[in-house]
Image 1 (cartoon, rainbow, N blue to C red):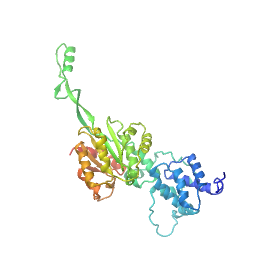
Image 2 (cartoon, rainbow, N blue to C red):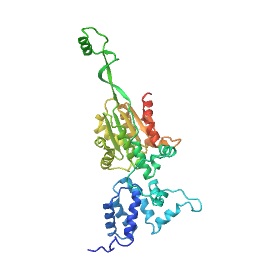
Image 3 (cartoon, rainbow, N blue to C red):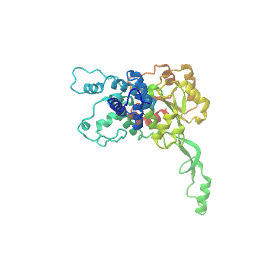
Image 4 (tube, helix red, strand yellow):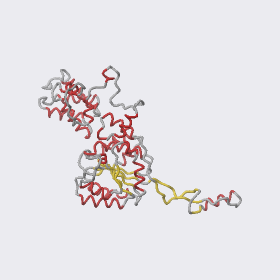
Length: 396
């Protein structure tokens, strides 16, 4: 059976879809040749006179992550508005444009994908693969400092991938506590009698010093709760990558994602490779980029996973912007329970990037009342200072 639209591989349709696929890749959407072939096939079976039908067909085969859907739709609207739109978009970004340009409301990933190629690429210099990220050793101090201070939500696709790699190198020393178990050492309140007898046997009964027992030091058990709602889309993935690498040596860490429900990511965090962890976490989370019902999620934690909280020694890191859509009273009760069963409850809030921020939303008010401290996590500089900030809160 021959499709009524003819062969999409002939004419300009195939070129337009191929160019659109390249633009998606520049925006950070993962694509390969098989998906592009499926896109060409899908275009043959829809009415090209209806943009919504073509958009839905291409989105079905080209987008595999919920986080990329909004980027796809913005790029589709810009790219397929008319046949000359791509050329005109690039022309508008040239420095010869007259008048005052209106600020773009598109996402940084979309603006970067639609921007003209760099001068080196225009001169014929070979391009690096889109999916290969290399750290430029010649990066100037000002460029490195700009990336350290840049808000994660304002990064372009290539900058976001670079910052994610840099975040994996940041250490997060977790405070320690003295456990009940002991070991032999030079100082301690109790005498190590087996060590005394062994020393006496070696020295003919003469004791040169009294071995003592001291308590072992262990890192605090860590419980991480990450908000994966729509407003936290750009922060969740990067912070998960940071925490996976920074807490890899901890003997005990439990990680949960919450949106409209609770998702256990601890099995994914047991994987050694961060990219593999992110892939498995993405497959586990079914409510990514949705709403936020923190109270319901904490209720699930209390009913199903209360044993993850080891006594009152657990350090809880709750990563959220506090824009909760549930009942504030229920959220307050669950947060009070979590506070009673943990050593410290720390709220890591990306909205602290705004000067003069105050927790005025209903969920944010409850979080601010119950948390022992509120810390910022919106750029690399704040992640580098996170360990010192946690230690300062624990000393209070």
